[in-house]
Image (cartoon, rainbow, N blue to C red; front, side, top):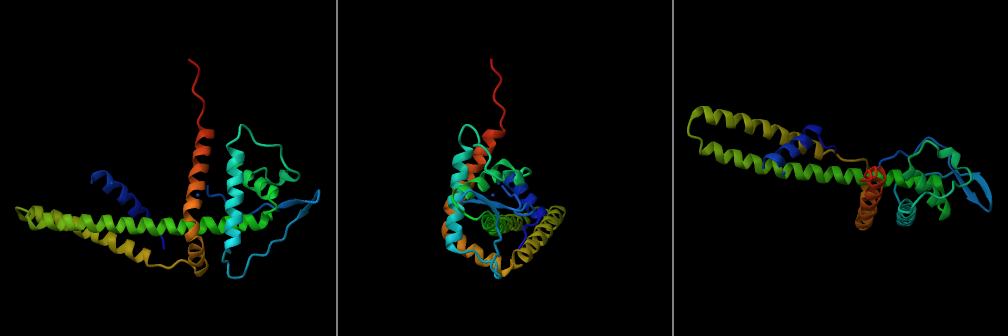
Length: 221
């Protein structure tokens, strides 16, 4: 299920005329601090790729702790072994620190994080497609009404062209919306559904913290 870029652009254009941090979870070997020792983790994801409720709860707990850290005046001192994530964003690094502090295996956390982002992106895409289709149908209904009341043939021809264009776009969006996500993604969307309000709230707070951090201070007067 994909949201057409053209359709997304069309949604914005029609709106004017009428209307989660996505880091990847790969690459760096992760380490955890256990009993004063740094050891390599070896998480093996389930074959079906489906999240558990406990994993989602742990994910939320880690993200909440990372948000608390990012909201403070400055980041804490690096944990042992943190050099391995030197290329990560501060937000992702804060999540890894939080996972370590909460004794959540880092490799498992990163796998869960990727599955959550994947499922949430699919949910957003589904909603976007649905919103586009609603707007297209309203626009087509309006165009058909205008055509019925058109005073002359040239006006009707112009409206016919517009109706054909919007109809083709609606058909394409319907076709793309009908394409099923992988079974694991659909299963994870169901697992995450009861947790979506908390997921969205934390994502919004993280976005606000990042925006505040990226905004340069106003020059003194």
